[in-house]
Image 1 (cartoon, one colour):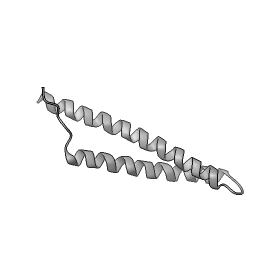
Image 2: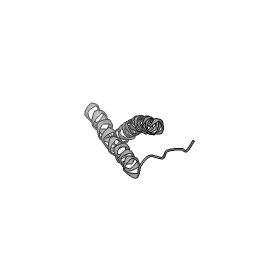
Image 3: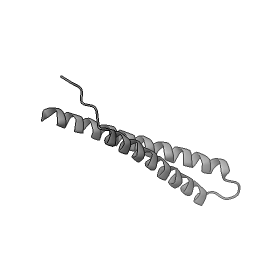
Image 4: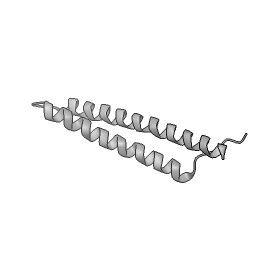
Length: 78
């Protein structure tokens, strides 16, 4: 049985959505820490941005991989 690869459009949209989610997660993480911190908050804000970006990107990547696998399985059954 041949393995079905996702289209270039599907892979491009996956990468773009992971990058966009990482950027949004980073902004949210930075903003949450920045709002709660007083004084010099450079390091905590940076860590909040990093953690937010990683969590958002990983979560989005997981959902995208599952969706692409489901699409590949669906196309094999046709």
